[in-house]
Image 1 (cartoon, helix red, strand yellow):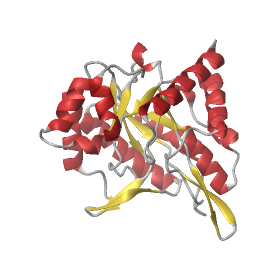
Image 2 (cartoon, rainbow, N blue to C red):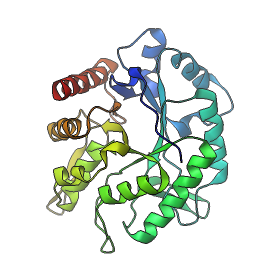
Image 3 (cartoon, rainbow, N blue to C red):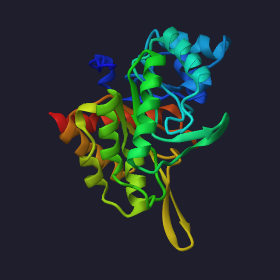
Length: 283
């Protein structure tokens, strides 16, 4: 069991996802953000300028690592070599949090660069719980598991996502990364009530919250939301954030913006808005 530890006071202030285009701004001087999150797979190298830059930044900002390739839903298990490389990275940087997704990303040694959905069944829960436990043992840390964006419902589903993740947290001691944009996208695409889904998440297990934007496209006359992280956080996601704060209390919160990157001041302004929403909801 990997017990949760209280978040650093520095993580109370909202953070941002650090992208390479904004690295020069951070290296040039202090920026107004509580913490930084980076994609772990971008730093799995033995040396070079990228690691050196991150070493410098972690002296001034808490850092969280978010991986995208653990494939926690893979029936053939998590990759031991990948876990060993992540462990070396995490031991070096001592991140405040580490996370990955409720998804699978490959099979039999073949990696697929996407977060593929899982049927939410008891059998799937057994597989994911085994993989999460093995990952936490290998990493020597509590892992946060994120709810991904969903675009369909499996006829085999036996539970909603929040119920599944609650059971996973009980069985493994893992934490949850509640992505409110993903929750909204998933609910909209599947004709479900996002607020009802939110209430099924276990507050005690939620250790981090993500906020981001999405795109709306038309396919065969139907509207579909795409989790592209390419715009400002929209009003419905801010509304879910307010509800989550009032229901669960404040959590370390991150604003993601991965495509069509804005100037850094605009991204920092989104984090400042998250701080304002948190203060209004918890005062």
